[in-house]
Length: 277
Image (tube, rainbow, N blue to C red):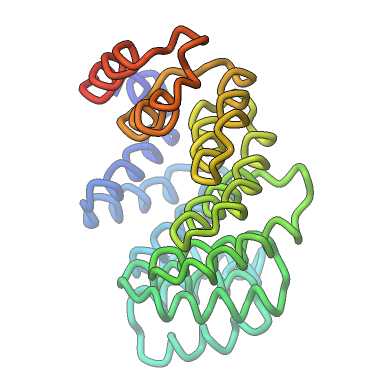
């Protein structure tokens, strides 16, 4: 609210509109985005407002003017408005356009996920990922496969996402996280260990990545390697019951931790502290 008081009027309207959307105040959001379009002199603001209204199933009157300046963008926004207002024939049109237009793919994914139709979203994501080869689309396949419980497929899709990305891709961490979780779920601890190692390389300072690799090493009975991993990565504190129980049950009982000073009573005390905090 302090930001809204200091912001320029149009920026404040945009923020209020986004807040209304997140709070499911659809009528308020529609009114606020309409005001953004009316009050802003920036065509990017106006186009953004039109698109946000389209996702709410409303076709803005400004689309008529926008078509004269950028017919392609206006056509995309009109497609979204038709799709999210459930206009007859719009779903079939979007599916047809998704074979050639990336924006139609995004609209369909949003449409099906909003309606809880993950199976339909998966069909769209998989077809588009195979056709376009984009890592973001393969990552979406991995998310959806993981959500529906096909962890083997989630592993393969997340690997495909990484393989088709560059080292600078911003979602590599998420892809490796899915790989760790899905590999663990099917008992592939070597695969989970390899993914956790990559995860730690992407974000060396992340204690959860350290614990993920440590946990995988313990499951592979590589206890000394697990301890060395924990030592080499800042000896992070337990952040919930999983790493704490890992140490107490799998390591402390083997007297591996005693030389570190992280002995059983201390470990259990810290488990309690972090679990309750």
